[in-house]
Length: 593
Image (cartoon, helix red, strand yellow):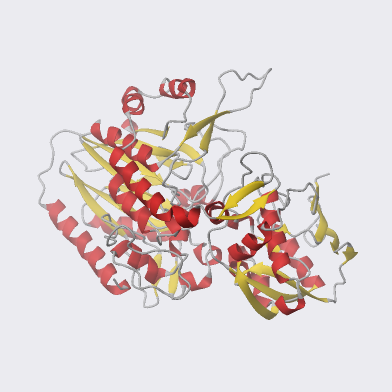
């Protein structure tokens, strides 16, 4: 399905919904609408080793205790909870706030993410917006995945389209108000309107306007991403002019709370910060609810009477709101809104953790948590996808001498260093580019690489793909020593309160002086133990996402004498044949004093 046809269908559907809403009789009593939302699923279809932090009731100021780690997740379990939440409400809607696809485990990516759309249909998603990762493969492929149909095989494809029958596409509309095509027309419908008991409710979508800087350029070619608040406000005014007063914004952008605050249902949200809260300040009063995403955080904030919510990521939780719709005004009675984040319990959830959380929830939500069981039909469908993927996923590709872990956004976590080392090894030979070092972006490291059992441990292709799923090519380029130092200084650009460290291969080292001014933070920069000459032309390796300026690395666009290399995952598979072990070497020494 092409872009124009899909947009036209979606816009026509919106018009039809509005026309249908206009003829519905007005209710005489308040109508309660239950909204169930999730975000950043990222194709995590199976129950895995996922958890959420929860305050430990044994912790006191005098004797602090570590947080509980509550085992959660799985789409069959998510579907079961959604079913119970819907069973307890006369009117309900299920919303996905973006990044449902892209950056996924193998079980989604090997089917071009058709498996995830299929699962979302079966969960009962009613409306969605797109996230930045929905654009990873470009707008045309996004339209195909949403619109249905089989992908034409291309040379080099290892993934399978229509593996379990013809891909039907999304049975729910996707809305986004701030993505425009070159001619200024919307890529997708800006909003959709639904009728609940005779009252119209509008759903407006938006995606972070930073998408062009965090997606490979080919993914957003020909598209323009406008200011989120401006686009939502304009669409809200249009809906109000048509008699829609209850408005929900689903925005793929997020924020943060204090790192020490683990309680995702603290309505006060002290020290909240981040783009979503700046956007919320500028939203028109007409917007009653903000469902957010992108930062994979959990929060349930009451901001001047308007809920701003996010439920972590990967299907670990849902945001639930009971909105009371006033029959006289058609608007949300905000003083009566009940909203909470709820976990998605699974078979691994400890009974004590389950009871602790259920005991803290209002009666209707506690009842749903207690009654929810995994959706058997969906579990069977996910198992069928897993079985189809098994021959590739279970193929042993190498061994490791210990677990490679992910961590906070620092310059020294072992999983990122492993990838950087593999890319350097793949490109250091003169005929492969003569790279002196390699750098890896932390956002591209999607999972740890666990050593299961006694080392050396076998590693499967599925393990490697889950760790690094984007399929970027390696690029060797040349910059001067001074330009490389500037690039590293830019890890904390103006306006950032903390750095976003790149992960270096073993051959590169430096000290980061946190309190030094910009331009003086990177000190004692060395390659293979030797000081870097600012005037020297130095060859090094990054992935194609970084080479095109992704993650704000605009200086890399100036890289000269470029030489393309193999896929990043192939370089890692080759490196795993050497049985690498995690090391404690400090490549970036961070000085905070």
